[in-house]
Amino acid sequence: MLRSRLLALALPLLLGACGFHLRGLGDSTPLAFRSLHLAASDQGVGGVLRQQLKLRADLTLQPTADQADAVLTIHDETVDKQVLSVNSAGRVSEYQLTYRARFVLRIGGRDAIAPTWISLRRDYAFDENNVLGKEAEEQLLIRDMRSDAAQQILRRLAAVKPPVS
Image (cartoon, rainbow, N blue to C red; front, side, top):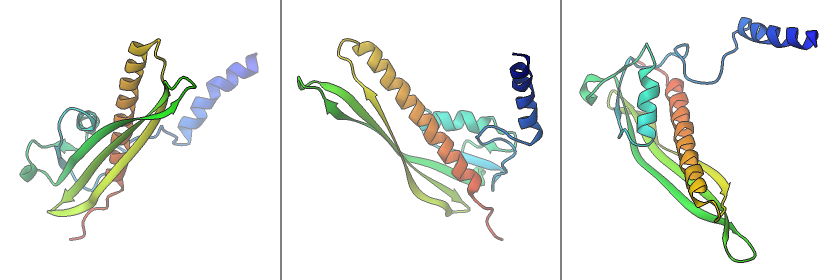
């Protein structure tokens, strides 16, 4: 009992000492630009990206494209819902949600990231006796997919190399 408690206390200290940190785009990941204009609505992935980018101390979000070093544009964002399976009575028992977003990053008038699609899928079981609960679950899955898409976009922004002068 005492051994397991000591191990539970020592493990976080050891992980912290080796430089381990949770996945994400923190200030330790330098970007190829200092200012960014996000051309996206605050609905959907644009709002999630804006929140996460505001947390960065080394990046300034600019209100117009001409004031920014780089421009990130979210062109399309769609959510599709398809029947995945039906039961023996012919009623829907599972749905598949597909989330797609297309974005492009331009630095100095050139594409630093060419137009790119991000596609995510989630399956969920449907229960006709709990329609309200399943609608809430669907909205939660959509919000989760938008957050995952935002993280993927941020990781791709971090992978961009500064332009060669």
